[in-house]
Image (cartoon, rainbow, N blue to C red):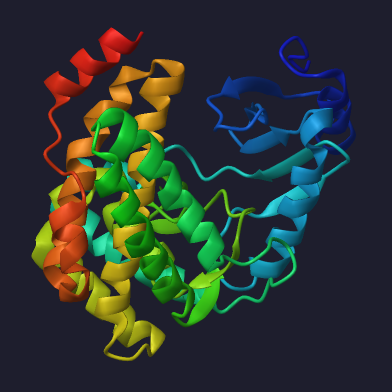
Length: 329
């Protein structure tokens, strides 16, 4: 009989309709959304992934379905088997991620990161212009404005003069990125959203896809969550060049990569600063040093942003930041 106790009633009825009664469900860790995820197992060992969308986020399910139809023929994603008003049943691609493999075995991880470049290039060939609005210069600028508020002014206590001088530099960077060639972006294309099953890569969590700079997802893949510390500069540039070869991009792709990475690195400092300041989540401060490393790396590649190099506060100290925040709270 089905294990009904942990599932919402409508999810139980959905599974009975499509799988019968002989299955069990186990809850899985979710993401930042209120969506709930379950692994569904049958006696023969077959497993599935079930996503359940509460009433307040049902539009997210419609967006997911639209995104699935747009990209299913342009990349390896878990097969959608059945769906309803609040549920989606998909192929189970396991729990092992590209991020995990890189941390366990650098050589094998780098090989698979090369395969992830193929996955990215194929994904970019899909067409989904109407599912979510494209990235804009205003959007990029607003992300960095959050950093100016929470990181520059509140966490690093930079002077008002420094903060005000950063504004136009951020705007200039946002405008540059918004004029890059645009392709379809996953928006969260990193190793933890790429699962590895039987040596095949599967891309998940793609419902926020939208048009944006051609190197946006590449920067996410090679730098998010501190993976650059494992990859190393040489492997990073080799993978950027592999992307250029596979995608047919021009030789300016390296400059665009570092411009996009610079914006992403600056904006994520805003998130890493806001979480401890607003919500008291102090562990986010530990993510700041590798992000500053990314910013320094970008500025070495981008002489046009030398003024940013001299203005942006990068003398972060975890001990000093904790002390300042403890006094605030």
